Image (tube, rainbow, N blue to C red; front, side, top):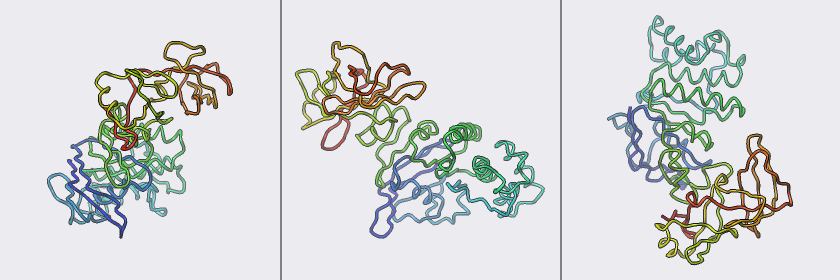
Length: 355
């Protein structure tokens, strides 16, 4: 089912929580709302669910405007961060609750609950109560309660944030598989950019109640619209270095950076600019060479499959991803260069990407 936000705004007293939100979600699409705490992600979800009222604009689910439609009639199911399970109910009764609330015949409820439990591997837990379940199992019960209704839209508000790191990765994969199997339109809120990159067919990056950029995960990562999107996506974050033009070459952090011909005029016209380079696009070497700059190793973080190196290039911080056996130690010197086809340029004053 299609979802649309048209010029939607929301205020809480003097605080503007959302401003002029325009978003179109296609039927069956999983769109992730991503941004820092307080940016308006959950408020946007609650507006669509009917738990809050929009002060401006129009909300559509399918072809129906739902601004004044009661929550129970919007054909949405919401999964909350804290699971919101009834502690005195069994798993079966928790999953069955929305069907019973709609006065569905008992003969129809049982097979639908069992099918939802099967999809989420809860078959053997139907007689247990939430206190007897692990965090991951409780989360799956909350998901089963949402899918048992077969709603037109799923709204998921940071559903994995209470799980430990390993279980979060496992449950994320299960959740993505489930969404693809069901083919139900899904809006998924998270502040975890790794989660956003893996879950969404598109990602909406929000900041201070406004949409900064909408695009595919890879599109946002490779072609961010501005400095905020560039640094918010990616871990470790993108390097940002003050840049200076030297003829047809850009110098940043002591290294020479090749500039695409298509960007030269725009970069030259900017009052000031910064050079953005992802850590994986910083190449490290043990000896000097053409285009390389020296840097002192400050911190080495072995990650098992790779090493994160934090360097100091004449007072400029450089973060690089290196191989697992990177031969370096704090205080030693490495030489670095950057991949010319992955360099981005940003206006210093506005943060807008150049080119």
